[in-house]
Each structure stands twice: as C-alpha cells, then as structure tokens.
Length: 242
Length: 233
Image (cartoon, rainbow over all chains, first blue to last red; front, side, top):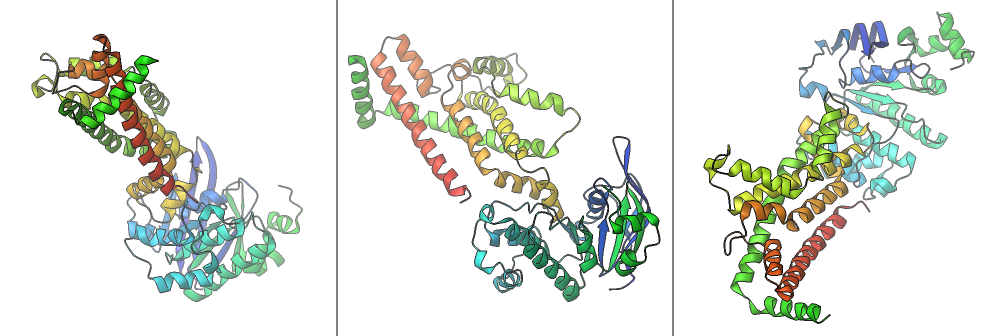
C-alpha cells in the first residue's frame, strides 16, 4: 500500500431530481489499500461506488483516476481498470466457467485454461466449474461473482455489500480472498459495508459517510479506537440508531 | 364430416402428387415469411434491446405504449397503408413493388416488427435492473451490453420470434391487398385458401389449411428445440 492516490475526489456533488445524495469536499483513495465505507442506508455509499466505477457522472466537482480527470470521454481501457461486485451476484445464466470468461471475452481475450483453472482453485470453485449459475447457493454464487471480477485483474475492485446475504463461513471465505488478492496483486479495494466488524477485520482505512457527507476517514485502528468526531464515536459504539 | 375426410385425403394427395403449382405456393409462402421474419428480427431485436435497457427516458411514456399498440395492428390497415405507400401516386411508387412479393414482405415485416420490439423489450426489462450496471462495470461497451442482454433474454426472444412467425405466416388481409393473389406470382397459402373458399372448393381450401398448419407446426417444433437448447439447466 502506498499513499499515492488512485482516486482523488474534490468538491464532488451528486444530485438526483434536485436532491443532493452525495456532497464530498475531498476524498482520496490510496493505491493498494482496502478502504471501507461505512454509514447508514442512504448515506451515499453506493452512489459513491457508481461514481468511482464511472457508471454515473458527478453533478459537480472533479474526480481524478490515476491522475487523469474523469470525463464522459474517459478511455475504455481506463474504465476497464475498475470493476464492481454488487450485493447480489448478478451472474449470467450460464455455467460458472462461462461467467469467468465473460470479462476477458469483452476485452477480446481468451482466458487460458490453466489460468482459468487457477482462479477456480483459488476461489474453491473447481467442483462447480461446469455447474449452471442459477443452481448455485448464495455463497457459491457470490464467490463466482468475485472470481468473475478478479479474472479481469482490475486495479480497483469496488465491493457493494458483497457479504450482506451470506452466512459467517462464506463471509470469512470472501474476506480472505479479498485480503489475499489485495496482498498478492496490490489491487485497491473500496468496500461498502454495514458490518463494522468486517471493516475492522480487513480494512486499512475506514470512512464514515452520513447523509452524503464524509464525516471522518482514518486508519482503521484509529477510526475504531480513537475517533476524532463525536458522530464516529457514537457510530462505532452503536449508539447511533439507523 | 365427409368434407373434412375429403380434405385430409385431398391434402395427402396434394402433398404426394408434387403438384408444381402447390409447390410454388408453398415455396413463395416460405420465402415471403422467411424474409419478412428475418428483416423484422434484424430491425426489431436491437431496438427492443436498446429500449429495454434505456429504462425511463424522455418520451418513453409515449414510445412504449405506441409499440404495444403496434403489437395489435390490424393487418388489413397495414396492408392499406403499404398499398398507398407503393401505389403510383404514393411516395414509394417508383419502386414498382405493388403486387409483387416485395410488397408482401414489406407489409408483413411492418406487422411483425412491433411484436419483436415489444416482446424483446419486455424480456430485457424483466432482468434485475442492476444487471446492465454489472455488465458495464465488467467492461461491456453499449453494443456488448445489448448483445449480452439479448442472449440473457433468450426465452423472451424466442417468444418474440414465435409470435412474429405466427403473425406473418397466418396473415391474409395485408398480403391480399398489396400482393393481389396473382396466380404464379403472389399467391401464398393464406390467399389461396380464401380464393378456394370463395369458389366453393372447400375440400381444397381445407387441404391447403392443413398444409399451412403443418408448415407452422414444423417451424415451431424447430424453434422449440432451439429454445430448449438455449434454456438454462
């Protein structure tokens, strides 16, 4: 992990139908870090992920990706350096292997069989390789969704509540894969989670978003043990009902 | 009952006799249906996929109900419209298509197109609204996204193909108007059935009807097999 920014947001605002859902004075995502975004529903966390994945433009302000200003004309190759895994797996109605091949296929690449098998092994999916996606359990499906994103070897992986619907054992599997890939490839991870214990377990830094605004961002240890803002302290203590 | 029995015998005899006129009628029916279906699919599938992906868009509240209305267009009205379009004084009169198979293809394509668009857009919209975002996030361009959504909507797309095929092959009013039911030139199974009925040749008319139904059944069997091959297991 370095302090080099991969994303730098300045005075970013996102407005839907006249309602401001995101209003960030400044936020930097460091290259190679795992940054957790926590906060109540409607805080703007998912909106922020969509901006970071270039799926929606900011209404105002600037977003820089790897030093380059993000505009509607952002190069396709740059866009493809970032990908998202959503709360629901959103798999294609095909086999597990075919789902893994989808991302490389979009890039005109063929995933070499040895590499494909390596990913299947790494995510514990080899026994399910030829299974149809609709027949998978929730945990298996989410692992496939994660594998499908990882085979594209993104520089930034955005995770929108990826374990919200999973049992504890699958949560642990997903977390260990994220941590391992972050350490192995230096991939930057931005994780939206409602589970503050998850943020505590795997994030290098944690940020609290509230009503579209960034309340505090700090090293995870400091965020949970020595928060600067009273709102953060109340959130971490669980005093905040949301 | 006797008429029905005669019809089946007649149909069997017609089919086995290799009557050149009947073969020409069947051939033209298949040609006109095939080309009209192909054009309706080529022009309808991308439009249906794009409309399905656009979600709410300005004017969508008018465009989509118009498409749905088009799904129930009275064929004879389409025939009249195409007739006026292709007539000597019409804007496309120079094409000299009136009373030719090309005019019949045009009319049938217009009848089938809204069915293809409407059923495709419904199939595409029936997916999780986050799926297109997920695919874009994985790196899909707009065209790759539309293609993937169509492939993911295979069952709905097959329903569109079946509905379009059914509407085309069974259509009579429009092809009668713009084709003219000219012997050896624009006579297809449906218009031949009308002619034979008017002449009081009921057995022959029913025999032609049985052939039409058999063709339709064979085509739908083939489509069904394709559909089952593409269905998720």
